[in-house]
Length: 363
Ligand code: PEP
Ligand code: MN
Image (tube, rainbow, N blue to C red; front, side, top):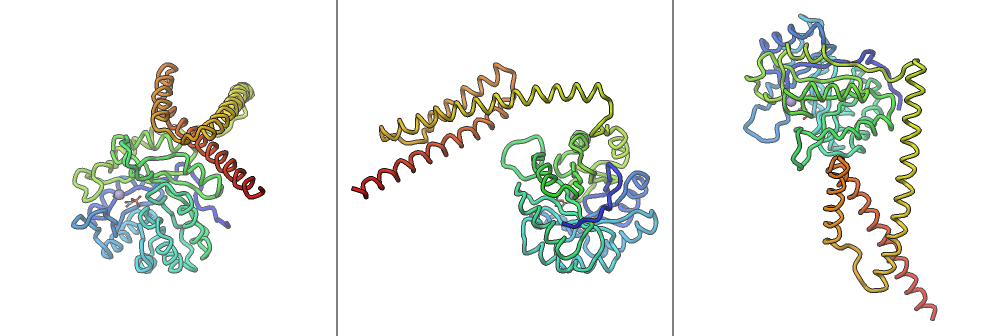
């Protein structure tokens, strides 16, 4: 993918309200944050989960954004979801566009938007799809790049989850990291507002994003969050934005300090030894699983046994407690181990069955 760099500082900061509500609201907010932000954001067309909620002010908001640009000198960005939105934004000289999480999920929409952006040179940001599917996120970036958009960035805004969680959208930090592995040159902006869903947790999520070396932040900011027409709970005041940005600790990725580097290498060598031990133990475990498979096969017993799985889970959670480990983490690891144990057993049974059929056929 051919990418042009357009983000030169960390954290690159995009802030502004969830929705444009009035010219006054945009102006007040923009003037209070213009000293620290790189781009001013505001949604004009709002994708709301339910009808009969505020769905954005529409086209007239574009003129308000133009006014912000003129008065503050800030770059302005908004969300587009259709080719018509693109056309209107280009006419209004919006500087940057983003594709929302509800649009990234659909390759038809993304392709239509990409066609409308053919030959356009402005930066485009792509939010991750609502559900954790890396392919769709990568696919959307590729579709835009294919029509010639070279100033591209990804926005990590977390993922919908049915599980009870502290966050509105589960961050699943491993996904932006995987995206970085696949597309190392694409900047990744974290959107702590949509991850946290709560103004009290924006700071914590922003710090984690910086610690994971993401490039920037998109933070919903409103001069009166309590009166916001959308996402009121997660918007912060301009004052709080200044505080959060001021408190961020920006850690370096590398240092020339020899003492630090030698010590870090020692730690890493210890980790490598332990990791090798874990793999060796998993290999011993797999051998027993294979024996069990043959044994079950000979005795005509099914592979998956629910009670045994519950028992494993119960004992491993107790082990987790005894070793002061996070129960959820241990449970997740064993779910994966158990999944592969079942796959190993199915493979053995399939092979032995096939062998039997073959032997029968041969006489
Ligand atoms: C937004 O940025 O206001 C928005 C609607 O975001 P998302 O697409 O991440 O839900
Ligand atoms: Mn929002």
